[in-house]
Image 1 (cartoon, rainbow, N blue to C red):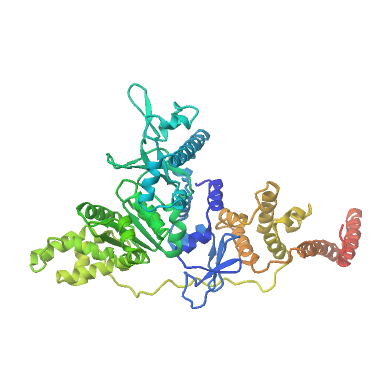
Image 2 (cartoon, rainbow, N blue to C red; image 1 turned 90 degrees about the vertical axis):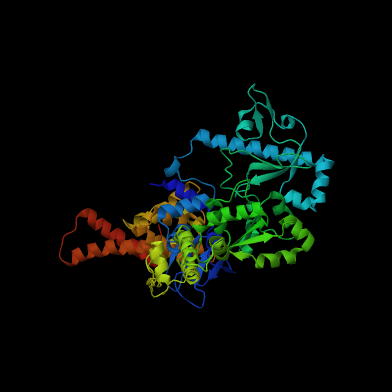
Length: 590
């Protein structure tokens, strides 16, 4: 089982608006966001997302839930996969899979992050003292504003410049972070020397690595941090932290080959670029980008090396394709990279080039048909043979079908014949979309318990004003369990706007889930005026007390009416209940 505390922490870090906006275009209206429901067909938007409650609800079909539920319903994930996906987005690892990090491991991570931050600040300060490095960035057209945005720096031309930044140059953390190299004799020296420095950030903005570029002649031209506990090249992308907002707003991300391409494009007004970190594009890179954008464009040089890199990116993309995303390839003229192209041709020409990028399916067909003579039977058979190792790997059903149709046409075969050759089931089906789930009935009249819980969910500060008998009035009910959780959260200081969403996942598939769902759906609709809320709560508590009193009084009264003799204690209770009824009727309370 995934620990509940871990699920709570994931939900506390995830922003449901950011999550859903990756799949559904949302429009802000007041405190909430709205869209046409992704779970059923509709023309007018009835799907709302609450950033304060971290909950979505459709008033048309009744679909509702947290970020976890959205991934389960929209992406078809299991609960475990949804938690894993959300955890990955906020830089967390599911404890169940690799074991919860120990206190020592957490301290080590924090120590490494502090070391990287200190190094980054040192490199930035060194840049200001290096005319040569400043001139280099100016020659590339960069301003101080862009340099500050990407936290660019300079590693001085010396063996141990970092010695001036740390109290202990022999600290093991410097070695673990990849900032220094230690030779066989135990002597240390800086990994980065006489290079302009590009800090690499994770999605939370922490510096986890560096890329260093020589200013003049020298090899290697680019030097990257090694693999460390913080930094895995196959999982990270340079510039994603800075580009994320622009990517989400436009739905487009461009993957370039170098750090300077990313920074230069941002300088010239295109902040949507990222770069792989000295390694080939990986499936993890694609997954990460597809969570951020609907369209990915890989930009490569048009030379042999660029084509080779493009084929690696193509292979990494195949099993990540989705019908609602697109991937394309832009090959620049041999004399250009993105940096030089946008500087020489301008931003509009760059955007036009992106618009004309080759769709992945077209690039794939070019690759499959390369050196194949389709005028012969042998060539057409070879095309099907080559495609068999690629096309069945495409998970997007419509895109895979389009590819099969194209191959069938080029090979002079029927679609069904190609499908059989690929070992696939014949395509078919009525093509109808998913039916909307039945709309959940809502009670026309709410009792005081439901009204009180709704009021408390809207004004959580009122939980602290509940009397000691509030829980007892709810009896052994799901509502009492929910109220107890709200009181506990209030007492330990953790009650906030996200608490209900966290409780919803705690009680998934239990009676309490329905109670929480009602509160989350209703709290935005029925928000009471803050000044009136305490009086409303007092009135509801009086109604609850009156109900308890009347039930107890009626029980004793029926016994008297039936001729039962009451004991002295019961008779005393009967008189006390009668007096309490009169007080409650007049609006008084004990």
